[in-house]
Length: 283
Image 1 (cartoon, rainbow, N blue to C red):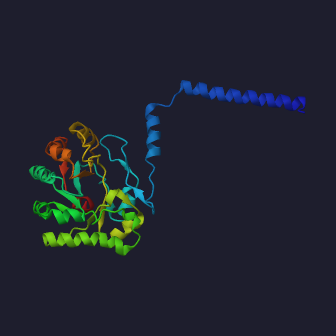
Image 2: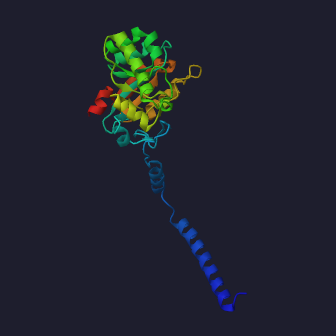
Image 3: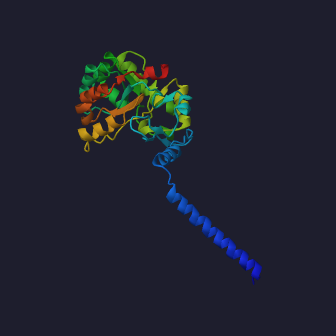
């Protein structure tokens, strides 16, 4: 049983706790955290960078502020150690255009026409099937000053390939086809299929002399039976463009073919110019 002295002490501690709790609530009402401070705190938490993971990682982006480079799940500094990139750290209004080419869907000619009209260089990341079935389009890309990059022969999840020999075969098979089609050596540009990567994969590509390119702006444009509307495409591609952006579009997209001329013009009206990926790592 508590003594009278200890009982009195407990009562006093209880009153002190209640007083502090209510006092804190009252102070919060009088002096609430400003919206700018709240946003800053949230931004700091979401901008916490993580290192490249050894296991499988899906490329991901978080857009914090319109017109600014999104936060990715690997920093520019960590990626650059492996000659990998997702955007350029710059205030200059430059855009790097890239297209992933899994197969021909009747839209690539229109895309090339729009690029030619705006004198906009692009990089086309192709798989083995595209090289085999569309040699004329490949030759046109090269002739008009574009770069053809390596998207692997079979488009597998490369993080499931642990053997350097098998990893290399996915890339060299594409290189050999490109050499056959163009008579030239293939540029050492690589984009991981499905955006899946690991630090081991980046190191393997680096050892083979490849530069790896992710992206800082893309949208869901690859479903043939659920193409985005022009308005939906412009909302994403105009609202989220930013200096130094690597833009990923798919050549299979009917919407991309229909809007590209207008899209490039709108970006130009915003003050942007288009540069080849070689400028990104040479800057």
